[in-house]
Amino acid sequence: MAIDTPKWVKSAVIYEIFPRNHTSEGTFTGIYRDLERIRSLHTDILWLMPIHPVGRAGRKGTLGSPYAIRDYRAIDPELGDERSFRMLVDKAHALDMKVMLDVVYNHTSRDSVLLQEHPEWFLRDVGGEFTTKVPDWSDVYDLDYGRRDLWEYQIATLKKWVDLGVDGFRCDVAPLVPLDFWRAARARLAEKKDLIWLAESVEKSFVKYLRDRGYTAHSDPELHAAFDLTYDYDGFEYLKGYFQGRRPLRDYLNHLHVQETLYPAGAVKLRFLENHDNLRAAGVIRDRDSLANWTVFYALLPGATLLYAGQEIRARSAPSLFEKDPVDWEHADSEFAVFVEKVVRLAREIKGTCTEFSVVELAEGVVEITWAGEGATYVALVNLANKCGVVDLDDGTDGEGTSLDGPGQVEVCLGEHAEVRPWEKEGRRICRLDGMPLVVKVPG
Image (cartoon, rainbow, N blue to C red):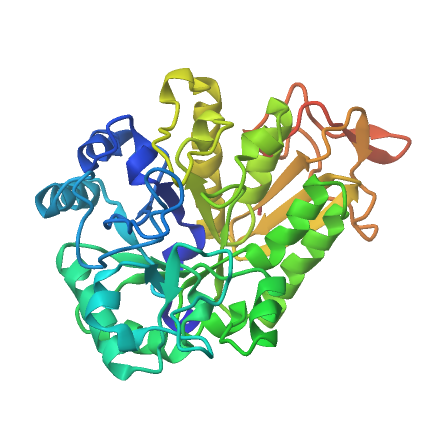
């Protein structure tokens, strides 16, 4: 619903938490005690991964996936109860954060309450057996949204959580659920409260895989008819290819232009370097300086910024979805956390005040991002290839050069100006790579 998405969403910071593994105790109370720190990262929305009881049939690992839900309307007693959940929500609200709940409406666990009470609501194969669209999802059965009474049940469930203070929903594999259902749910719940809707959209290859097999699979642009935000998975596959040495960075940079022009005006993407389904950024980008450059890069892309709990302390090991595996807060990189806070604060300010975005690759893996607004222009230089040496700031800019005209005319927002600054050399301007990332503000 890009036409009525609140403007603040385009610069929002979303902080993702896996309740079972956020702290060693794995409870709402543990999260409650961490809320001030989370808010200090300029978090606008606290996203809680599923909080419901996990199924036992076909369970993966010891504790099972939180995305194999046994009862949509219940809270996993290991996490707490409705009272402790409401206390968590109320404190988040007091700290000026919204709370987003993860909903998994494509499927349930294989021993769910719905399967027992309404087996007619489930997808069946040609032999009449319960099934799933994706064979690897062996711990779940898929729902069949051809049944309108299922729609009513699911919307009523969402209303229950809104009544408990929830401000929005992150919708798991949203493209696999009919768009008309999401539209109806949004319209019905809007009667109670203005909510934020985030779709976990999927890779383009996955959309084709499902469509080739005769299943519903909505594209990202389609989803914006019902959702405020979609994942960046349509572009993230290019970044993965770059990390693996299979693709040039320009493939992703070119896709940013596709998103800006072929999506509905006002559509917002969720930008991330990691989430619970992907490797930790610090595990993929092991060099600390390189990770700092990538952090600035993704935070300054158009759209909301996702932080997965532990990312800010450069955690390298992602919590297991199936086991008790808490984030290792004890060995935090505290200095990196300070850096992340500064980057996120700056990115919120820039994206909240500027409207014109552009990006250019000055040299292989060296990128300039520009955000222009009425009162100022911000320019960021990031060294994503972890290179040494210098880069010519006038290359790759169609002869116009960058907006960096000299140390006396810009305000350094991030980076040491004494170490990193443009200077004249044979009529051109060059900049050292070893001091990036650099973000400056150019007045006017």
